[in-house]
Image 1: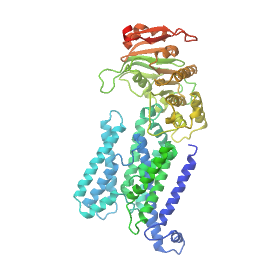
Image 2: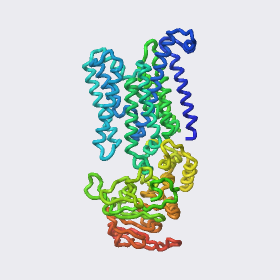
Image 3: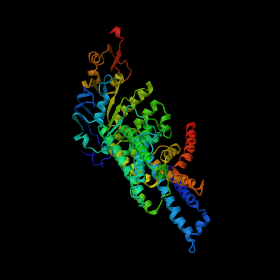
Image 4: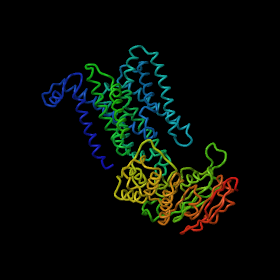
Length: 331
Length: 281
């Protein structure tokens, strides 16, 4: 823990650099110099609009979603004592996708701005409730996390089937937009929805950070944690609900962006160990920086077109992670 | 009643007795109870050893006393308070447990591991203080693992890892310590060092309960021995009184002889169990 403040400061600096890079590049070709000029009084109103209404809200969304995925991924790994766990392991993304695809295919509320994220959020919350109820009924006394994983994976498989069913009935236009949504996409960023996201992510993050010591205990086993004084059932339930709500909100805002929630916490674990007092905030900040950079890449490599951000996180993130993993193995 | 609830009493002043009365427990989906009507007390300055064949209910009894399992009949009390009335933190400040084994997919350092023992003493946002650090340092010293404090737990040998887990329990500063087969898999020297450490802790006034398969060391170091057989307390009392050839042969269903420890030293005369060959019984 002695190095923690320096490490957190390092990551905060990385986030600032990533924000600067993210707002400095984009399809319109406005560079860092043009953007600095928009701050002066006689600024070009178009450039100003691009900065304030397009690039900054998008950077903010990338930062929020990246942080939420990093933190929730780390939480699910600790909760389930499983290094393979990630934010979508318990079927939340599947539930969100069912909600979103249902909105797109049926055309409910066409033209209204909030129907898609609302559908995704409701789907995600329904999935997390369903998975928890299955696990509760199937576990003798409290929630057995092994049964929770099983329930999540089974529910996820069912949601996938429902998505395929919906897509098979869809016309070509909804089909295309559904596929794009499922790859993760930050282009819907706006200040209003970002504000809602903050309202949900901040309290959930505070709750999870308050459990960091309990997660250290939990990762040694539930009975060990109990003997050391953790309120195991309450910690598990709180962590599940807080992390799931974070994921639900993120997916509603940006679709299913993969790999961030798996790779980022692991990269931090490999570099700095498994003390969750450092690991949780570091996963949030590293997720933020990572998604900002991935989204910057997504916007510039095929400009003026854009790649889905979720594709970039996988294409860039996986090789990076493999290198890290192999270096860790040699140590 | 001082101590358990207030948190005002300094650790070290409070010496409660842990009592189990008429404890019975049936595992879910099992037909026979794992523990039946067992009564015992774990008292300050005493080492109680629990022995018996595999499946006799030793670990189940320990988990009933620690609160990890709720008895189907009988109750567990810490002095006069029912164990279930304590908060999780209060309980962990009173009772520390060294489990038989544990594993984690996420490696930690020895110091991080022992530091976990301070959980019950720290508020949710309270930073680790100097006193916490001093307690952890002392626990590391006491269990002779201070030289490895910054190493990864997984790099250590089985004996060293076992001592780290004992150090973590000591960092809890609980007046009661329950150990589940702590000498399993340890070599001769580690076993003896561990029993010496237990003797020191007993001298400090800790109440100790030790689940063990080692009748010979139990006979030398324990104040009292509880012999379990298929969930029942076959005998409880000073080892020299309850260790008899008849009782042990009945419990273990194997021919054996008892011989007095040859000495030298304070263990001279303690009954040592020697199992015979089947044909020689």
